[in-house]
Structures are given as structure tokens and as C-alpha cells.
Length: 93
Image (tube, rainbow, N blue to C red; front, side, top):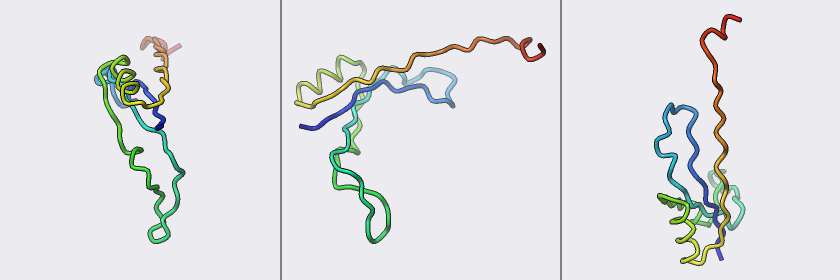
């Protein structure tokens, strides 16, 4: 049975807005460790599920899909947003 994690996409540090942060992702966890390719030296594995990333509009849709398909999953809670409120005048204290 494949294992997966479901998480909400966090806001990128380069973003000022919160666009696309309401979508939920389902990613499969690696089934086998990565090994170095003897010819190129690149790390890789034969597990192709690691490349699959599914997007869902809500947490319920993602968990419903995982249970319907028989995928064992765990939900990673979204990090709490911390606002750092400061004024321009604080630069001159």
C-alpha cells in the first residue's frame, strides 16, 4: 500500500499575496532510497510515484481521493501565519 502525505501549499517568500495557497497537494513518499547512477553519478530510483503530485481544492477532496484509492496518508498541518507588524518610524528608534 503506497504512503502519501497531504499538505497545503505554503506562501512563497517571494510572494506578497496568498494566491494558490488554498490548494492541497498529495505527494507519495519514496518507496525506495535513491542510488547514484554508475554512469552519470546522478541520484535516482526506480520509483516513479515520487514524481506524481496531485492538486485538490480542499482537504476533504484530497482525503476522499486517498481513501477511495486505498492510499495510506497523513495530513501535514499548515504552518501558522505570524504577522510581524512594524511601522516605518520603528527604524529610527
